[in-house]
Image (cartoon, rainbow, N blue to C red; front, side, top):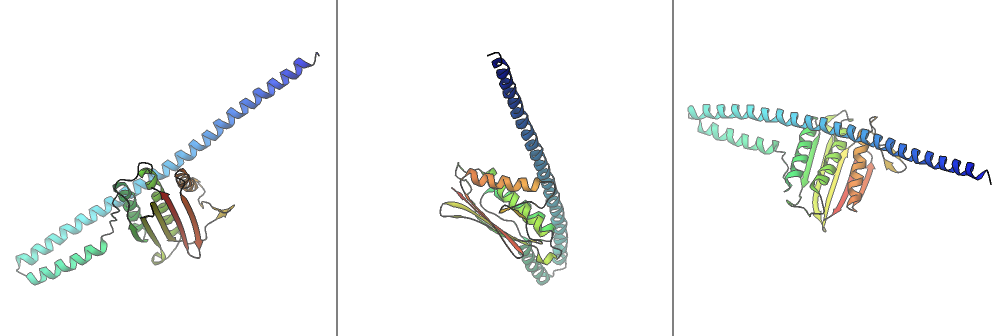
Length: 247
């Protein structure tokens, strides 16, 4: 009977130790998640800065070209070269049609993220073909922020994969978004320079920082959040992602 208090003391000590361990693990896990979140956000900020700088350079280029075009047309007009002026305008019209890569999905937020990523891809010698239709006002249950997160991460992954291909002519990304049978359908296929890595049947990041893999997990969580469909496939030289989100 005298040993009972010792046993209870040991049990109490074990419970306290276990509770302390649980608190420590929660803190450690939270700390690691916070670090990964901060790293992920830092990478996103860096990408956004790159996109803004690239679009700024493009704007400056367009402004410079616009000034030159105006001067040329004024010169033709001043000399009375109306036929040359008409030919110049026709050629300029063709040129503008060729360089116009602005995607208009119908949704302002999706337009912004998709066009900024296309701008970055173009600056890296990546050919992008995009056809996207997104409702101006989505169902209240489907967040525009979540859609932009998916599109942004898919484009970032595709751009990174394309940059591992040395020949610029072989770098490409194709994007398709539309409403199919009451669901938002997102399909993206891109060239890859090397076979993606898999672990346990799941594609993993090739980066050492882990932030890229965190982006993939964010996409997975968003799809799970809406009980959607996600499929990733890889064939020789290409990688494809297919997503369906109920509206």
